[in-house]
Length: 319
Length: 319
View 1 (cartoon, helix red, strand yellow):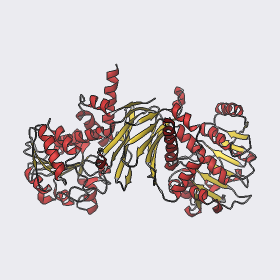
View 2: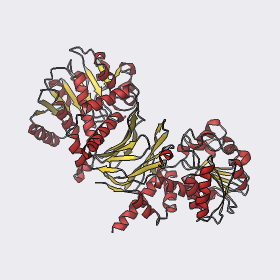
View 3: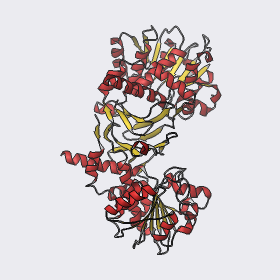
View 4: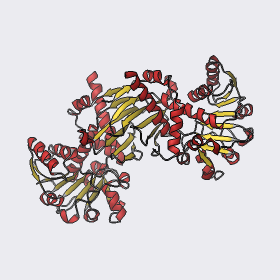
């Protein structure tokens, strides 16, 4: 019989885990063709609107494969419920039997996404961060900043969100954690103040344009993970010096890069894959004035690696 | 927190359920465009060989949607384990939250497949069954026959399997249930004796050819659910009078029909969808000498309907 773990149990082990290395290794395995990652499964609902993504796969040599189901139902707040939910299923590679059910309610997806953002910033952001810009005021807007704080000294956060109320809540929460937060009136005014920008909204129309981006800046785009969502105008990809995808094949169908490829301003050959950079940072050769963009659509290797780390931690506790 | 039900709990409620009506209604909803059924997700492993299918979707108006994960790992028998396993996840359509986890170990997939076979036989098989032919000696070879016994008086089973040992076990098991079983030397010799044939093997090369099939016979093909598997030679589809698919769109990519379409002997327009026949049996107009074939690749509506029936039964018990 499979073991079901709840969110509280999962959070209690995640706190003590360093996930940067395993998730980095997951990206490297992916880029080296050592991962079996079928296309993302998807159900999209209207009225009430909601979407469920199924990401799944296997990394060669591992004892397990993972199926992750994560949902976003954007009107849940009306009932006082979180929009995100989900679970991860860990199967034996040998028998196909499900061994562990991690009912993380979307938490592990949030963590692995924040870790991926941290990895991007580590390799791509300028060395002297003067301001961190954040578009959006939800969970990723918080967690991305939290996970960056072990990497940079900078405590200056410039934030923009559609809802002034949510921006106010964000300010309160992040100030309590020791950040200096300024709410900005537009996405462009955020970009003006910062040299590291993180976009975390579910926008379907561009929020940032190339005219907004200062030389030497880095953008990590988190929000768009479907063909419809878009936070960055394609003209950013036309002029950016370094363009990175978590998965080139997935970003051809989903996320910011898919939009830029469609308009023809970007060619597939100009895109670097994150795993290649992790394996060989020399590929980058970033200049002081270079603009870089990383597009994260979320790859099953992240789910596989975080699920394996959590299951290993549970096993170690049982000993 | 989601509730996890184990196989024993699930079996105890399934025994008391009549599943023919809900699964029939699922096929009708599907054929009427009332179901959201994305393409099947799939991971295929080698060494040891195994496959995992993810079937998922929603029927309009229902409170839930379902993600079903079912695996077949064909060397599990070496460790004394069943090849099939799996689970069904029942989500709230309103919030996206997972409500019930049915850890059925593949049992509900077996049941809904057997029920679909019974539905096909009910609409398509000749009225006077003189012999039931079975290719394969595994779980479906048993369950299809079990589920037919409430429909037909016929107790004469003619069976063929690759392994004489497994055929012997099949004979013992089915005799104990009151069937008269004869083991046949070839698939063709099975077809010669029967007017209802069920194929349940994972064969990748044709076992039956049009020369083997008597006039007036019906075949329900269960075994092939991937683009690679094949039990029926395409010449059967060239000459059959009635050809039925559980899902025309799915059967264009998987199962027997996909092979026949590829060779060009069958046109899409000649295929009837099962839900249409259930809704309007007059579409059939079967003649005494007609040969009919139903190709079942397994559709998520079956999983949705059986999962809903099981969850309703659990709720009724709690009252």
